[in-house]
Image (cartoon, rainbow, N blue to C red; front, side, top):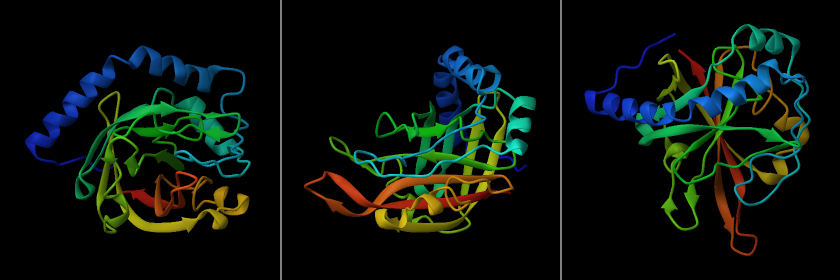
Length: 227
C-alpha cells in the first residue's frame, strides 16, 4: 500500500477534514456495525438502480461474494472519511451511503462523495464504489467537475477514519449512455461487480443534459487500482 505525499497545505486541509469527520464517528461506527454484525451483514445486496443524481435508471441485482463476506467480517470499521484527487482539484469528505431497497443513495450535497458501504470497503481486495455530483442545481460545478478530464495515472488518496491512507491510480474513464447501462453491464466488474483485486470506482454524471427531465443522459465511470 502506498502512502500519500502531498504538500503541507494539502495535508493540513485533509487533517481538518478528518477532524470534522471524527465528530460523526459514532454514527458511522453504528452504520458499519449494522452492516457487519447484523442479520444480513451485506450477504445479499440487491442493486436495482444506479446513482441517479435526479433521474432513475433500472440496474442490476448484485450479490456480495462469499470471499467478500468473509473478509468483511474479519475486518470491520474501515470507514473512509476523506478523498483527495490532486489532478482533479478534489479534496472532499466522504459520507456513508447505502443501497436501500435496491437503489444507491445519491450524494447529499455538491461537495461530498458518497461511499456505498454495503457494497464493499477499502482493504477487502475488491471493488469500492463511490459517487459524486459533477454539478449542482444551485451551485454550478461541483466536487467531481474535473474528474472526467483527469488523465490516467493520476493518484487518488482515500484516508480512513483511523488515519490509514489507500492510494489508487486512475486507469480508465468511460462514458456510458443510459441505454448502455444494462443490468449485465452494471453488475459486471466494469462498474459494481467484484474486481478480484483492490479497485476504486467513481461514478458521476456527464454527456448531454436533458432540460425537460432535468437529468444527464450519460454517466462517467472512472476506475482506479491500488498502487
